Image (cartoon, rainbow, N blue to C red):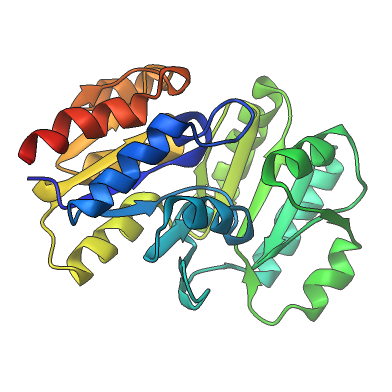
Length: 268
């Protein structure tokens, strides 16, 4: 019996224009009406997640930044935060500057770029938030703790080479993940969606076998592995499909709603 549903946003719950379809909204609300807990588990920042939570009627902890920040949907209270230390973040962004790889750094509800370009403009449209220009050295010098994540955007081959080089030096100090071929995220090594989902389930006394997780990308791998029912979207990365317990329809066919209807509503 499913007691907790965790769903990714981009490429999973959302349409290609970053909206939630009526069928997906209805399925989530019906699950809530049955007493099933539903949360969002996304690589997005909290500020780019709250609106979706409100639209769905959620008032639960939301897993954002891949699990680097867990925030209570209703109040906005930060329940958990795990950051990349400032000194390490400074080293990484300097490497990326030398390699001329576009990168953005994230601090709670704000996202920064050295100089706005097509990549930052795309991210701004996707997230519905302003990407601010800043001098990274000065910005990090004023930050006492660290950054939630460092995001690189670019060509798949360029990002792969950078990832391999960075892993040689920082493999134990960072967790590398991705929500698409054009994105590469760097986070604290303890951060992933699976760890965050496990913490929420245990808080509510819910067993892994009572959890359904839905996703489409590499950054969803840990939470699909943790959940008793890991559901990969029809448009999911091949690696995710290999570990999934079930493959639902792609996001453009309301795959989230179809999975909820199949595995949750038959319990009524």
